[in-house]
Image 1 (cartoon, one colour):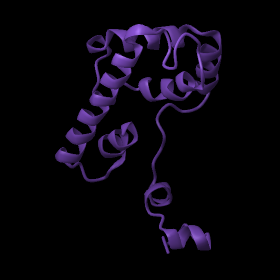
Image 2 (cartoon, rainbow, N blue to C red):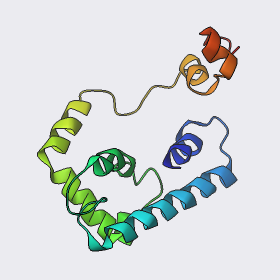
Image 3 (cartoon, rainbow, N blue to C red):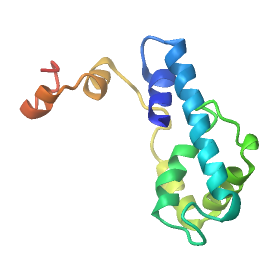
Image 4 (cartoon, rainbow, N blue to C red):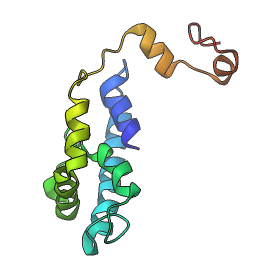
Length: 130
């Protein structure tokens, strides 16, 4: 759902208030699920850091762009800080910092990202969407 949040708020050429608000609210609901899950455990799956934490962390990193305030989710905020403090996380994000933070979305890349169909995937023709 955070992906749809990003799509409608950041990438869509037409800003549709209903879609943006819908996915900001849905992202908020999912933050609430994580908040409750983390109420009695340090990590998503329990006592140990697992792939669940690794997979979830990048979706929380852009919380401000998602319209979310981590102060509203103290358990999630604690977890986020704990994962951010891990040396592997710091190394990964330092490496990521070597690349542009904001992707350049040209009309061609927009078409490739959002214009594909089943037929275009089967035929490998990404230029015209057929």
